[in-house]
Image (tube, rainbow, N blue to C red):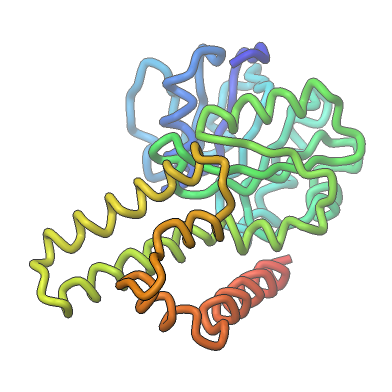
Length: 269
């Protein structure tokens, strides 16, 4: 990690918070972490000091970065405590909560607070995550770099200049892994219905999707070109695609699903 940092405070260590912490511990650049999570407060690690709540932090402790990985509905009651304690230190605040806007954080942390919204996804667990970030108007370039360096350790990161697109990004990459898992589950069940043993159907489905993604990344061809490359005229693939592409039904269904997720993300504000 290129940006120097003496300490990071992680608030909340559930599935996503834990995934981020696991990747950060594997990366050079941060000598020590403090984590607030009552469910892990008794844990003992060389790189991590665990705490039950904010009050249990050492009085002289000042983190460079504070990452909020708690539920969106908990933020309103939690943020004022951090504003009261760390206003003079001006840490970088990064939140992975869906829906909450930069204006929300400015209201609760102060209009001059250095705030970054981040939308990671669960493939971060495997180091193949996708995170999109955006920041407050007063955010210095050095803070943006620190946040980008942090999230790049979990996969890929992109900086978004327009916060209004965050709900759409949530609907695609934040929710997207669930769409992929649903597709895989459906493909496995279709294989079983076609007579394959469950274990074989799962292996075929997972490796086919994994291999297709690798081909997509390295070929330089469009999705349409790759699809046509597989589907010989009059062949088995074309017969299947005639079903999947009938009346543009799959595209319409995905658009409906993404719009539902986008609208729900907006409701969380």
